[in-house]
Image (cartoon, rainbow, N blue to C red):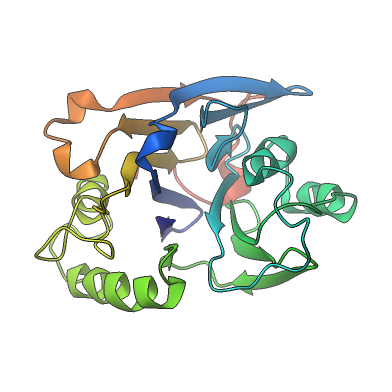
Length: 259
């Protein structure tokens, strides 16, 4: 249950994600820097060692959304947490590295999910879909787009939230960090189950996360609470990392200008 937005700019990009979850699960923990065999990564935690959103020093960002409009296969489809998927993959240095890890990964026992990966070096956006039996994949163009998830209906969420997103594309600051925050905090008129900032009796948007990725640095901002309550930029917890072997903007084919 989430909304995910990617805004591409040449080989740099912005990305934002709302974590919609049962209120009883709590807001989780803010982002921290982790290291996987020499690769630094930043991500918030669900409290059980898992995460839904992470970025690493090679500019790769992974986001996981529940896939609700698919019927799980078998009676053992819910024995392992989907939150473990990203920590097992985020140590990858490239798309090919991540494919190698996926080739030997076992997701048996996990409920259906969609995993979105953004790879600036290759200028690729990939989406993997696990239906609790097999893993499919789809490659997307290097262009801005959205993904939507809701335990009530993924299709319904995509229709209603997608309409709101399309309406905001012509705003003067569309594609900026301020626009991302405003979009993910919006209700489309009335707070409800299908607004981008979700409000239900037992479910709501528990947190908002964003990443700004350039060849020089990767920065993650995180807000614990409903995005509609983000009053000031100072309230967002921010963590930044740089490549340990030194940034090489020429490899990405972009200038040093910030997004």
